[in-house]
Image 1 (cartoon, rainbow, N blue to C red):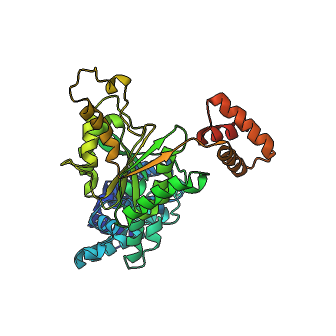
Image 2: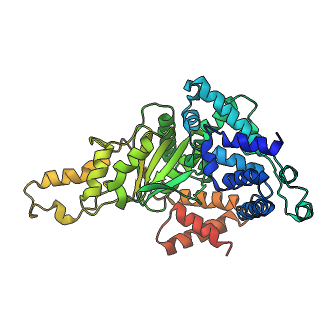
Image 3: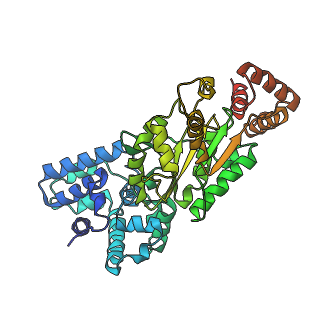
Length: 411
């Protein structure tokens, strides 16, 4: 049996990682191997289609990576268990099947275009054409498959740190159209990018770390003045703990009524999640308000144990109040009860962190730090004076204002 036919049969018999055969590049590659005994026009047609596909996918110079990447992001019983840190609990037969599949995928990723052409049954008939056919380069395997040495320990560790399936391929997600959708270009802000507000970020960091360690932790409300870095803190914390299997899923506040559906989707997943609600506020106690309050504490459809809710708001009490709401002339006999109901949502966040606008010295420190990171050499006095004028024109000091000022110096 020649090498091409052997690889074809081994791919055909994949078991645990069988899902990769549904991926376009792997499927086209497998179809090409299956055509090794077909007529020249069929074989050449599939060869051309395959090369066209990998060119479009940008992997004609790294085919080994494309083939093993399909397995890297496959979701199956092994990758889910490995992501949860308990793959060794799988039956021995399953683990042996995983090893066999891994070796098959690696061997398939080493099969060159020349080897496929020379292994073709009618290679003599297409010799002239074969010499002019475009060839691909194999390159190196994807990360975890480089580590495969017959043992699954290193491979499993990769899944433990990076998750499985779509949650290994992408790092940030949004709830859209009734499903969890990946964010292709997420904000890569890091904790080290900040200046100031160390006390506030420390609280959020410690709470998140406790969550990942399985210790007592709380849902968190970050509230305060606009532009002070509330949302950026949440995203930076999620990025900081990404290697520990933490993922962030943003749900728009107008879709909070669908929270129980989101909860059901992530409850059985091996990763841990921050469910992020940005700019949270309500004009009145609508159905979304009631849903969130029940989720935070007291409802049947509570948040899953593998998730925390992090919300940001410019308002401490979230619900927008009018003076008439505090008037005893309103048409509500139980006015005090109505006020207590409006305040009850924010009280259900176990951790509240306040962000206020920086004073003049704090603002100057933020500006100087940002300017230093950007490589600006403007004298400090001149830089700070310009920042104060810029803040005045923007209506007040804030880290966002400081960033905009520094960026304006490059215009």
